[in-house]
Length: 95
Image 1 (cartoon, rainbow, N blue to C red):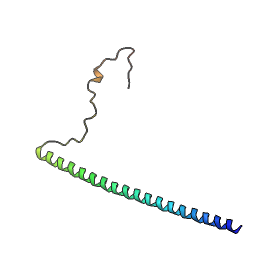
Image 2 (spheres, rainbow, N blue to C red):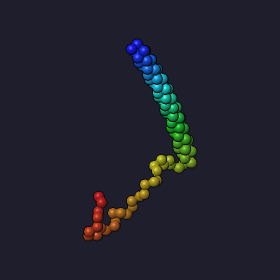
Image 3 (tube, helix red, strand yellow):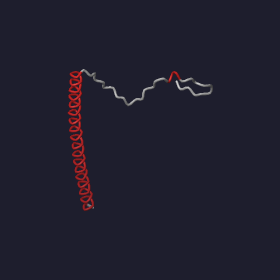
Image 4 (cartoon, helix red, strand yellow):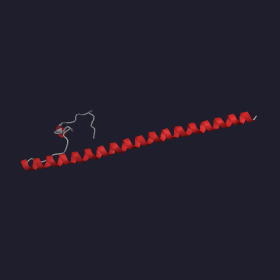
């Protein structure tokens, strides 16, 4: 009977050591991910500052040349003259 108890204690000890090892590995992975996120955050901050500086330089150059700075994107199509199109009977009007 004592041999069984000794084996059960050894298994319990082994399970506890295995659990601790897994816990340490997981903690190391979490720390690695947090470090990577912090590094990416710093890179993004630097890029935002660089973009801001470049925009300021562009504005200065355009002011020197007398051209206004237009930071609005022209991706959206303009809807000119749509109100002049007559709507016939039975046409679908989307307002």
